[in-house]
Length: 297
Image (cartoon, rainbow, N blue to C red):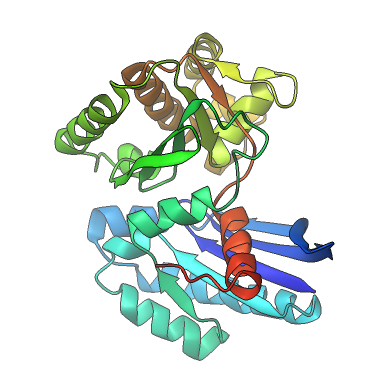
């Protein structure tokens, strides 16, 4: 049995095809195929508040290709979600309809709270001490989702319009930064020894660059050193000298800035990076819906 997850983000569009395993009443999944297409819808959505015809056409072609791949892999269940860029595009509903009509894929535009819930569904915390306190930090192209957990219980969760593409396009606001800082200070002041859990493509790349032993946390100091190192190179040299992909080389700098700010405000000294993200959460959400009979609300 195979399930598929599609994440239409502000920077890239992803398809994850996963094999679903049942063993002694436990249902799990193993990643089979992951495809990432850097469409960068956020450039349209955050600057012009709509998805251009060119990017809509590219998105539909991508969805058609994903549909063909899912057919070849004999996928039985699929869930497709769009996040910040599509939330802000005034023609989002029209694009959703065209994707349904022309690619045969039903797409949901999910709000920030639902996005945070899906990311948490990835079970990023499963190998971490549940008796401790953690702040989930998911940085995307258009938004940052924060979820605070104390002794395994959700304390607070919120989505903020602060993301890497938004920053590059100068569409982040001081109000959004202030709101995020106040949220962190209000909800973390009663807890000591908070650790971070970072998800998203940029923190995954930063973790690989840190050369930390798999499963070990990355310190705030190491992240700051990585940021200073990367920022010392021009965009061109981050691509040609460091070998970063073109669509990663620019967003990794504002991503560092967001993670560093959140960690500083929350008093976080170490961040765990379980290398999961939205698509993992979508697959787990599908499993929960199909096997546990739960509903995403």
